[in-house]
Structures are given as C-alpha cells and as structure tokens.
Length: 259
Image 1 (spheres, rainbow, N blue to C red):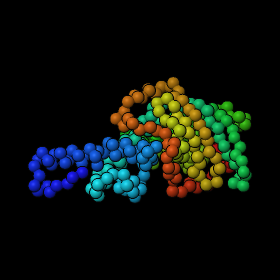
Image 2 (cartoon, rainbow, N blue to C red):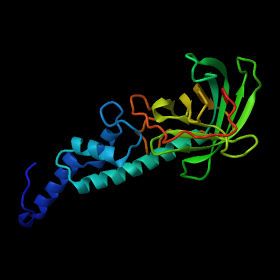
Image 3 (cartoon, rainbow, N blue to C red):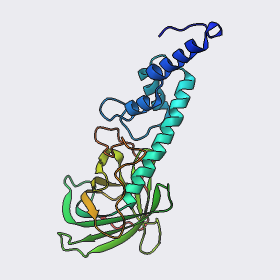
Image 4 (cartoon, rainbow, N blue to C red):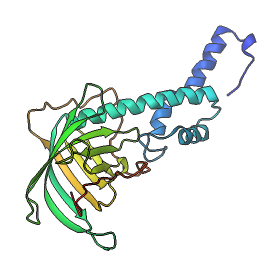
C-alpha cells in the first residue's frame, strides 16, 4: 500500500485510502472470520487480550494499536453474541439421548468404569439475551441397576464457550453440589437438533467424565429459527485450544465415585 501526506490529499484520494485500508487491512468481518476459523485462524470461541494481540499483529499487515483496540472491541461483542446464541439454542429445547458415565473409585485406578443410561437435560434461560439460568437433569435406565436420578443445576456459558453446570446439593441447596463442565473443545456439535460432546468433572475428588449424544426432544418448547444474526458460528470446539477453569470446586459433601 502506498501512503501519502494526508495534508496534501484530495477528498477522493483520502476516500480511496480509507477504502483500501478497510479492504486490505481492517475489514473487521474478514478479520473476525479469520480469528474464529478453527482450521486456519486462531480457532477458539474466545481468548484473553494478550493472546489476541499476538494473533492480531502477526496476521494483520500494517496494523496499528488503534486497529487492535477496534478489533478487540468487536471480538468481545462477537463473543457475547455467540454466548447468547448458544444459550438460546440450549434453552430452546429439552435434550434427550444416550450418556455413558466413566468414573474411577480412586485416582490410583488405571481404568475407568463405564455405565450407560438415558439422559435428559433441560436448560431454562434466566432472561432474554442472558447466557445463564437454571436447569434439570434426569437419568434413567442405568446399566448398573442403580436408581433413576433427578438433579437440578445452575448453568452458565463463559467467554471461552465453556458450558458450566453447577449442581445443587440435596441437603445444602442450590449450587452446593458438584460442578461439571462441557469445555468448548469437548463440544462436538450443538445446533437446533443435536447436542453432543463430553462433560468433565471440575470438582476435587470426583473422577468422572460423561460422553453424551442428545437430540432435541419434542416437548413444549418451540423450535428456534435456523437463521440468526450471529450466523457463521459453528458450535463445535474440535481443533480448538482447551480453556480450563481457573480452579476446581471443593464440595464438602462429595460422595465418590460418581454423581
């Protein structure tokens, strides 16, 4: 790109310069598409500013600090839109299908015990545009013959696309039970019809991860529209960086080995 003294520029030259700047350097839609491209770009749902800065200046020729600030603000807006879209899809249906619990009795065990069951998850949204709420889980037909279970939980989506499920404790109440996380990297697929992936314990002493493959159940909730202003996002974390939570939850009433 050829730069020229702005003080000597005609309006038409300035307009051409700005058009070229937007086209070749900071077309924010193209930059964001590249940033969220799981195969060619940075590839995560969201990231911290330091990592984003490194990505931005290594991929955007001629970029300056003000360009990055503009990009970062737009990336943050994009992340919020993606969280709201994901939350709308989750809360727009009851989900039903198969789940396999994998657990160990102690950390010394080398293999996990696997128990299959039928899983039903229902996410309720706290408010329009929110990315959190309350929910209910029902497990039936457990292969080991253990009783059916019904549990309630609080849920939220963080800025990395991780779905955090914080279960209630039967005695202590809301949010006092174990915490499970569907890390964005472990989210195989989420759209209006399918929800699959791995749910991992984020509770100290609970050695469990659950594989699930669920489909939209035909309950009272209306089916969401396929089109959305945040279209272009694919809620599948494959090939992305795993963003762990900062620390594991401590639960005083934990009853090992599985939920």
